[in-house]
Image 1 (cartoon, one colour):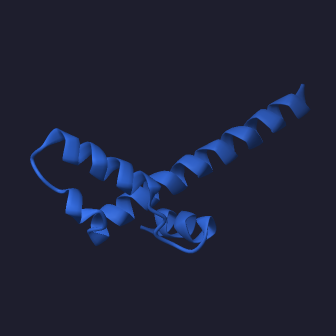
Image 2: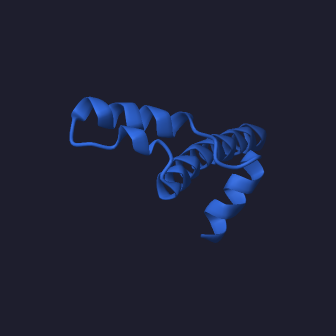
Length: 72
């Protein structure tokens, strides 16, 4: 039973780390003004901006992204 809980805990931590990296990349890209060509009042432009920001990788490694997410 203990092994199952350990594996579940590890899987949850990895999943949360992946989500943290995606969220921090989105946040930092938005702060830097990336995908600014899609800014505007039009909903279609906002959807394109969100899609662009979700695909943007702002740092060289996921480890650096987690590091900056945790210290900020």
